[in-house]
Image (cartoon, rainbow, N blue to C red):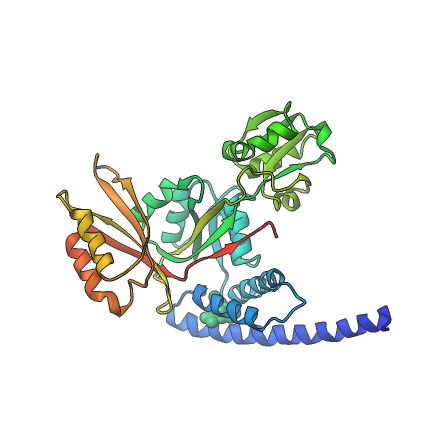
Length: 361
Ligand SMILES: O=C(O)C(=O)C[C@]1(C(=O)O)C=C[C@@H](O)C=C1
């Protein structure tokens, strides 16, 4: 049998090779960066990244688990993007919110994450060039759409580059080591609501205190061992808290869909979904005609939502996701027809269909 010393020697040799290879990869990434800088192209290429990850998974014969390989590679890609150009990304703050944690998981640690006080500031910051990318929450599988995010797509000139889904799973976090000392539980009202059955069973006497965000709740409970917060388990690392209980939500299949936005359109090929916003003339069958076009072309409609049109009462704007690349040449005529039928039509972007990131694993 090999001794510990011998195994460690072998690990050292492999690590040396890995560093060498990572640097060779970084050199190539810098070359790509120069080409992109010359053509003013955006650094983040979600379709290419997904292709890389897919190929890696095919090649991986273990024992390295798939989730570990993906996590390692997300960081390699994050560093690669950062090498090409400093990457600022705006998110709905403060630090530790689901948006922040979701962004860190999807885009990696090498970016500069800048918190914003509200969703509009994210759109505005991206349009004004304060950041190359923004992360916006669009909808939740249990609670429905984030109305504001939909509205700002109508008002700001931004494009969608990627989508991903992030699991909403809650833990009980505290400075205390045991649950017995907890007298108050703090969190965002939605998180308290999502864990109400667990709280009734396990902490029936605790006072429930609403907070503006799960991140602020986690920050607050650092002050006192009798307090606990409900939020993502990663808040434990961020605020140095203990996880007293995990996966305490009543309904475990809870996901939020996030979009990555930028001020210029996305890359040209390989896209699977397109989002559009449109308004219609006030006449019978106006929406039916639009839907008929999609039916005629056998295009699958994944989402259709109406929102009040700002400044014009009882008028509506429609937000739709379709399962095809509407920006490709193949659909030129369709876009032309839609343009005639709609009062206004804006193609928000085409992008690869999103991955599901599960922070619980
Ligand atoms: O292929 C590119 O366009 C790259 O910039 C390289 C690379 C990579 O490191 O592999 C980096 C960033 C992109 O998001 C995709 C891939």
